[in-house]
Image (cartoon, rainbow, N blue to C red; front, side):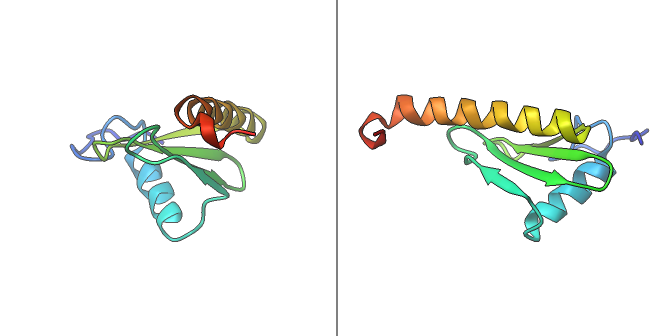
Length: 99
């Protein structure tokens, strides 16, 4: 599904603003499988698994929301990459908290 005449705002830049809004609402209602980060330092990420697809929501420090759509296996692989990047950033910025 593609947005033919996209609106400006926090969902602009998504291939389907309707899907982006639906995923954003799901996350806002506690429907994310996993969440990490924050909008200030790394970006906020949420993983939502649907029946057919896996969605990864990213929100940046300016409030823009981007939703990427993956097959289940590709989505979980991408989520692991995001987790590793977050752990690396955390280790670099908080070395006193590492074992």
